[in-house]
Amino acid sequence: MAEGGSGAPEPIARLIEAFHKLPGIGPKSAQRLAYHILRAPEQEALALAAALTEVKQRIVFCSVCLNITEADPCNYCLDTRRDRSMICVVEQPLDITALERAGGFRGLYHVLHGVLNPMDGIGPEDIHVRELVTRLQSGEVKEVIMATNPSLEGEATSMYIQRLIGPAGVRVTRLARGLPSGADLEYTDDVTLSRALEGRQEL
Amino acid sequence: MSQRPRVYTTEGVILRRRNIGEADTIFTVFSPTHGKFDAVAKGVRKARSHMRGHLEPLTRSNLLLAHGRTLDVFTQAETITGYRTLREDLDLCGAAIYCAELVVRFTADRQEHRELYGLLLDILDALDARSPLHTVRHFELQMLGLMGYEPQLDACAICSTRLPEADVLLSASAGGFVCAECRAVAGAGRVISVRAIKVLRYARSAGMEAFAALRLDEALAREVQSALAELIRYVLDREPNTGKYLDQVARLPRFVPRADRPDDVHSV
Image (cartoon, rainbow over all chains, first blue to last red; front, side):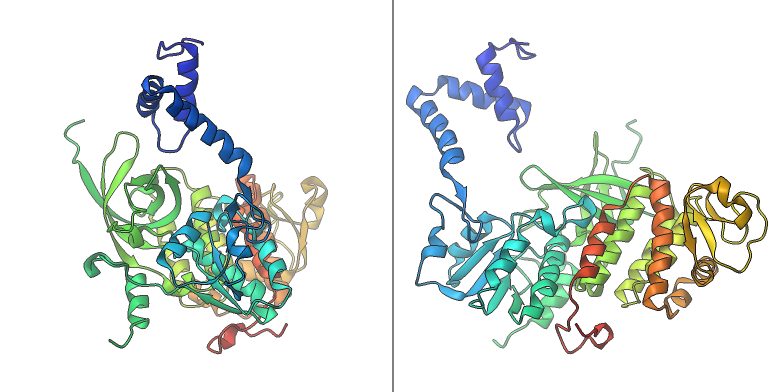
């Protein structure tokens, strides 16, 4: 057991196994990473270990928008210059990074941490929909922008939330769908193309 | 081994997806010639993937696949029907996902099932044309029949005597309706009204379009739905996951999001 299948000493075998658990890391890559750490300067390895501990200890979910943050509430929720009448709903924290990078949005966010996936049994109670409904109760929010992915699951989630919160009188909008830059019309699917055609704009 | 051609083409409906690794996805496809099977699409989650939109669940596509060691690999995909209308409606979309789940659960891998494939296309077409949701009952009953689980609707499932035109007991374990004399033998079950039995018989004999045109009041529609749900639960020995989701959606308040949907107007 200690020497494992790889014949490596136990601490290395354990490190290999830990890397192997990471997404997209196969047994060979795990081995390569482990031996890289072994050869790397000690500070580098310790810095990695410290970063790993820190991320688990210091990162929490924002109690308002559920974004990942060091301080609760997060910077976006605290920023008084942001427009509090708009909430942009995203699937994952990384989506916020993408939207911020793109610029242009100055409202608040809400992270669902997932999407509805009826066939796999992931329902509204498994994602953070309830927290969104609670946030709307103050009446301050006038518009909810659904920025879930334009996939079957993402759209189902958007439509579900629309029906859930629509009666409250909040305006529910959705990101436009169409062609990404660099796309080929030839390879674009019919649904996207027909939506792009409908959403055409004056040049 | 090496005689086998490296690639093959088939059409199919994408039933579900499972993401793996950085950008790959395993899709479950239902094809008329190859039955249900899993295949992997490499890099399909990247923005520049040519296959992305053509492999969305609930899309009917022409597919080119390469034989792989464990899983076959998609090399090309082109949409035949994108079913846009049903995709953009919460109820229709849920119903379609439910039908897709039934196909996933009722079929074995790589078993050709042309008739079930045809039935799946029928229900997707019907839902895409905004057929009423009770059309799904036709799909359920016909699917049970195709898979060899057609319930006994005319005679007692235990003693085979003709059923009276009255409310009778539905016993999923007996395989259908049970006459008054056999009730004790059948044990627990649900009493089904004559009207619901007639709807079920109609679902068996009529085409999908004719059945969709039926006018069912809400109570009757619910009765037929629970009868079929019980038969399906018995065969699968589990509840389809989507069933719970459909219940949750049904409980949501109804309102009219846009003026162009008069069919769905229900005052809250």
